[in-house]
View: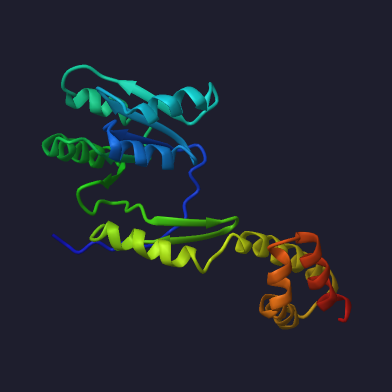
Length: 220
């Protein structure tokens, strides 16, 4: 088998659907993550309590749907579940069924996230700080190391980064109006990033940090 060429990407999930086969703990974890971004359907005979609660709390306009099935899934039933899918997730405890779902999904042009291997889509550990997104992956080879790395990075990339991202965006908009030279704008933005007093202020008061950052522009 050819080695996979996995390219890290951020993809707009607006209007897309993810179908997860398996309502156990693994399916639960995947569903709670995907349902933050797009319509997510979990296909299973049974569901964890967290999935049942999450579906009830999502309301009529929510992104999480539970599709309960009885008996074994036929190929036609799997195809029907995948008719609108962008990504399929194989999270059942039946490896043969997972392989059959993967085969059918591929025949329909649907990308697959394989829980027990490296599929077409690998889900990284994610750190979100506002507009700052950091994704960590070992390409499915060591989930524990991915989690450990995420914990280490979280101690450095604090929640203040979310506010700094907002501040940089606002300063950048102002600079575009006042400073025509792109190199000069970059220089000022870096000075703001390197100013420890702004980082100290931003953790306590965004307004104070904004005023401190504005001084770099007022002297232009």
